[in-house]
Picture 1 (tube, rainbow, N blue to C red):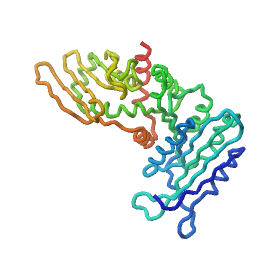
Picture 2 (cartoon, helix red, strand yellow):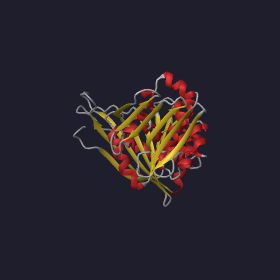
Picture 3 (cartoon, rainbow, N blue to C red):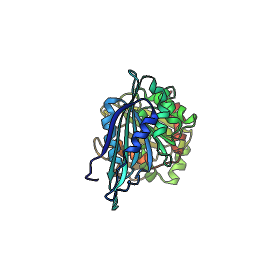
Picture 4 (cartoon, rainbow, N blue to C red):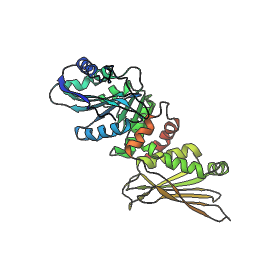
Length: 337
């Protein structure tokens, strides 16, 4: 991080073109007076509420060491007109580099009818040589004109369906967005990565074939209603093991958060895998048992990841998330039961 203060501009403009001109004028220079090269590896666009904007800025700043971006934070305000903007550029050192590079943050509040022009405002500020990621802090809502506008030009969408009020509806919204062509993934799916890795680590090919001949999966989730994470895990298992897999979702009312709490997977031949996360710990109790065999019990890592860590992982990827896309129709079917 540089010791030099950031260059900032705050003001009110009537058009996106004015914004672009103001941002172009905020260009730090090095000790020789030469403009700094941009460090950005991506454009990151997000739409948030005013009360969440400070948290979003902190998350984006925490990513800048490894994934510097031109970040654009958009807030909606239905009163007034025009655009209130906070523009910020700063010099930052990365890794062992000797020369500082440029990092940029744009925060916009769009008023009144200006909300309808959000797409043009965003386009005018994007770095054209970098991929565009949309971070949408909720389920993807195809009926929301702002979502439709800002997602249209994005190379990849990262949503947070678990922040919706209705997990069944959120799963349906995810599935509809993928059917509409979006290159989409979700942080609830990213949170399942340690679970999926652990299952893959503990289930060998012979066990997979036996499970595909018929098996029962019991998934226990926090709270009363199945969480988005539980439904996505169930969808992934159904996609991996086939339609013969019987899936049951059960609440663990004693656990208030965490998505998935426990997975029991048993073949018709009686071979059983049990994974139960220890409360408030990044480990799980694992049991592998087979008929006539001695059960094997272990404690294995099952890490929690912060919101920033989950987002950082998804910003590393540009390709479509095919396992996620295949799991969604199964999750939707199970959610509707």
